[in-house]
Length: 173
Image (tube, rainbow, N blue to C red; front, side, top):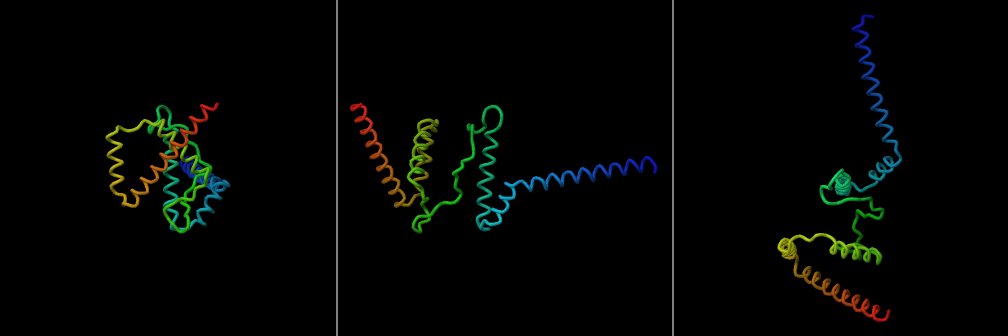
């Protein structure tokens, strides 16, 4: 066999081995138990939900990858981790499609998170906040604005109660 033919055959063999290696690697990745589980779950998922779920997962993974970058975080976040209790579907209460079904502890944790975020995050300039808030309020229906008003009045009453109880405890202690 001439040398040129042997070299051509050797290149063909290398390309074949490279392709086989890539195929085996791809098949090995597909046999990962989590990939198998993910694919089975996707197959069971209602078809009309798939796009929204995939979009939500893609968004979260992209955000996580951004926060893992070296140096100064691009978007000001560090230390993201998966939430083992994350939910992708809103729970419905009594046939209403606008309220999530939250437990007492979930509501308490959400309130604590929101309060701590308000206390630690640098707020936008007052004019920006006011403009954005007014724009949001303008699109609400009168009933929705009433619900926001009632909620905030109730929150203020609860805050005043907590402050009174803290003051009483300090005096007693």
